Length: 143
Image 1 (cartoon, rainbow, N blue to C red):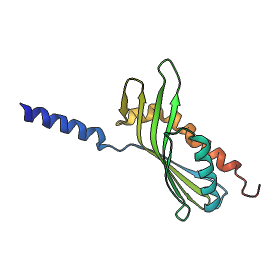
Image 2: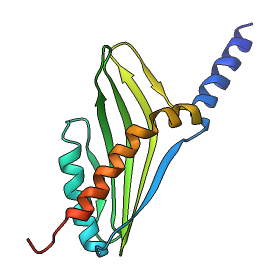
Image 3: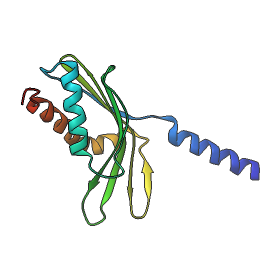
Image 4: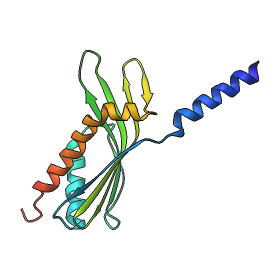
């Protein structure tokens, strides 16, 4: 009986992390790779000013920035959306990928494992990507 319970526990834990959901968008821009990288780095610092939102990797040569995002959703029971964000830049294009998606509040945390959860939260994820789109459009390397 103990072995059966252990087997179900392991299968449940495996299925929880088996599907790596991601949310990805491509942004067209007029910026060069270097300018898009600089604008994205600046945006990252302005957008994720929480101590728990940290840039993990930045490589100007490859044009890649990877970090952990944490944004608050206010309400009667406020919660946080947590994710890994990867920004990849090249001439005139930026690809943004959000993965390792989860949410947490004062009581519990939940890893997103279904497309339904992703669709429910996609408007908030779009807000994040839209703010990067706006930052890229406003960026002026010759200020």
